[in-house]
Length: 201
Image (cartoon, rainbow, N blue to C red):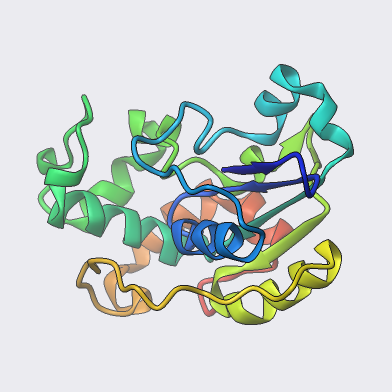
C-alpha cells in the first residue's frame, strides 16, 4: 500500500497483481521515499480496515489493480512452494501433494484468510460496495497506469525495468483440472463477476 498525503491518493496493494512494481513506479513518478522492506502492517490492508483507522483518507483518490482469480491463485501457490525462503508463515503448503489438492482444500483451509489469497472483492469493498475510485488490471498494467496518471495529473508513470524472481508454472488454464476449476470458480464467484473475469480470461 502507498499513501501520499501530498498528492492525496491511496494505492491499495493487492498481492500478486504487480503491486511492488507499481508502487515503485508511483514512488519514482511522484518523488515519494520508498520503504518497502520491512513491510508495514498496512501493506495489504483492506479498504474497509484502512478507512476505520484513517477516516480522513476517504476523500483521497483510491485505486488498486486486480487479476484473474484463477491466475492469481496459481501464482501465489507457485511462489509459496518454489520460494518458501521468502515467506515465514505458520502455514505450510508442503502438506499438499500438488496444486489440485491445494485448490480442492482451499475453501475450507486457513489460506482463505491469508492476504495473498483473500478475495479481491472483499479487500476493495465496504459493506458490500466497491470503495475505490479506479480499478486497473494486471493483464494490462501500462494502459491502466496511463489512466491512473490522468486522474492524478502526474508527470507520467513508467514501470521499473528491474525483474523480480519469477515462479515457473504452465499457463493457468493448463494447471487446473475440471474439479479444481469448479471449486475455485465457486469460491471466487464474486471476484469473477465483479471484475468481469472467467476461466477463459
